[in-house]
Image (cartoon, rainbow, N blue to C red; front, side):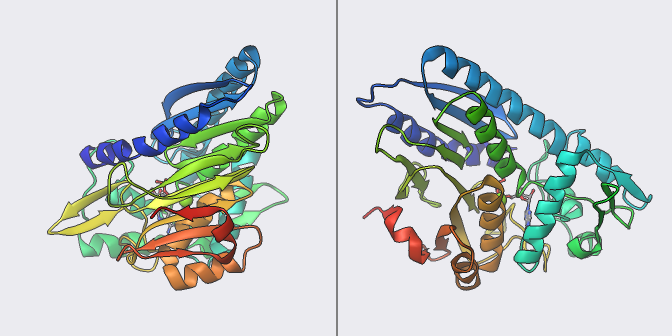
Length: 337
Ligand code: ADP
Ligand code: MG
């Protein structure tokens, strides 16, 4: 899809900045490798001796592939098996996917439904992350798809690890949280391998593990949503997940209107009012789900949500290009002049 490719090209400045942050006079060497996974370019950089670095980078890519095979919406996966059961009674889910769905439903509740993991019918209609072209659907199609959404309708039985999607055509799309989960798993794999410093960048969803060097935080460029290769801010972080949701990542334009992949669950159309939201959090799932949710909520309600969530900070850029930082973000995120 042409616009997706365009979106990916925009990610390059961030990748380059990350790469340059890995050089310098550190005594430990940084090893890097890149693969196309989860629909995006994934770059892994590890600070470790060569053998450990090579093995741990391989293990991270294997783990990301494994998570993708469990959670993919468009390709056959454990998630698509669950979605196929809609309207046909309850289904016993793989425990890991079951837990991820439970977490997604928790974020749906926390965000008053701004994060909505049951948007599958709309994702199919808009097709922003499918292999064929995205398109602007007819209003009646949007209405019909919307009628098959709603996180409160998903039944979860913890004792039997079963899920029920009560209506045929309902489906879960974990696209707003799966990459964050994959980054959580990447951190676990790196920890098991004895690595203490690493940077994993999955198309702008980033794990900054440990430090770049003793006493040196990782420095992450936050992309200008409207200027390719432009950086609006730099975050200095240690042991954090830093995830950006933007309207420039996957979009199409029709009659002068930009339609992008973050949907307002109340309308079924792209969420309006913001250009990008960057969230810094101690877990990947929180950073990912909250960046999507804040994008839907808008600057005012989004900032309130961030302020009420401990250990989470954000930088929000609205449709006028105005920037809003949460109160704790000032020490972490430096705005570029
Ligand atoms: P990206 O995947 O580009 O990093 P996000 O984390 O913001 O961006 O997730 C967007 C994806 O999440 C969409 O492609 C879709 O699969 C799904 N999605 C879209 N709107 C919502 C929403 N309101 N709540 C939860 N998931 C959403
Ligand atoms: Mg997200």
